[in-house]
Length: 187
Image (cartoon, rainbow, N blue to C red; front, side, top):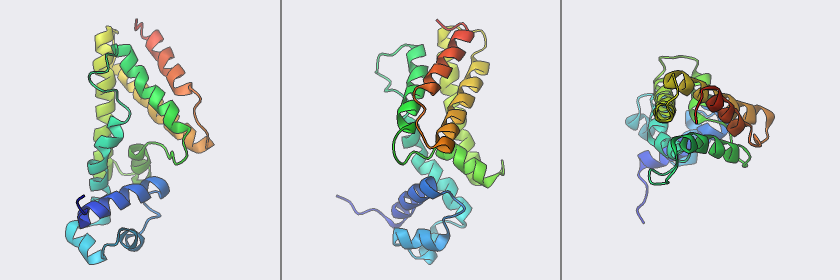
């Protein structure tokens, strides 16, 4: 078993705290104390807290995204691959500790489209939309890009709804995705 580096401890702690409590409420002092890292070490690794927030998303984002996508060899149809994302969201939304989409949360908190963390978050949202567009195109819908935008909006809105209500989605995300797929003429 390898001991995590200072950088790894800091990024893991930041990912946990920022997701549970938000970026703004978690100060550098608390973050460093929780991670067992000095502020000096943090600032040697990252110029600013904003840079740390962006790197936290960049580092931990792929695992978050992978949790919502089926394995490449899952043997699912394009429609089933799209539905899988929403089924996972429906499942996750009902678990303790679900605080929505960390990418949306961060972008909403920063409120700046040019903030380094917002740029990273937007990149992950573009990956989600591209995933939907690829599978929508495979389904032969007339406008896969438009459907991808709609599906991404449903994903984001459903995540926010679950957080705001403090309850699971009870299948609402999947049902809404199904309705959009049907309206787009997906088989």
